Length: 114
Image 1 (tube, one colour):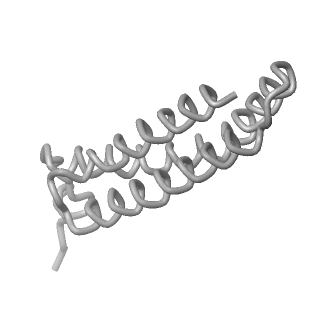
Image 2 (cartoon, helix red, strand yellow):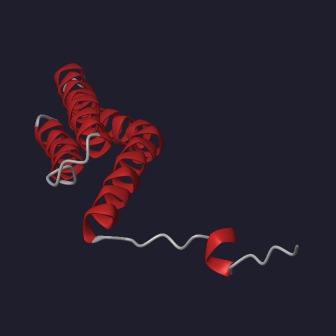
Image 3 (cartoon, helix red, strand yellow):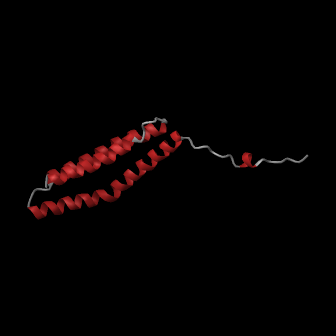
């Protein structure tokens, strides 16, 4: 008795639906946001300190605004996005996009304080 295996049984093909693609894009964006924060936050903080020293202003309020906005947007936005992607919500991509926009807005507001 010989057993013949079909190629599809050995390597099942996964069909990607648009919802699957959006969920994957959400996860990629969440991890990109976190990586971006880890890499760019010290640079942003350093630039705020340099700008404050150049203008003679106090860097305390600008740095506080920057870090509070950055951490709040990153944690809340990416947390909601990851939870929504894990529960297969269609709107999951909006939260990490809002987190990125909020982080940049926080930096712009902080830089205007210097």
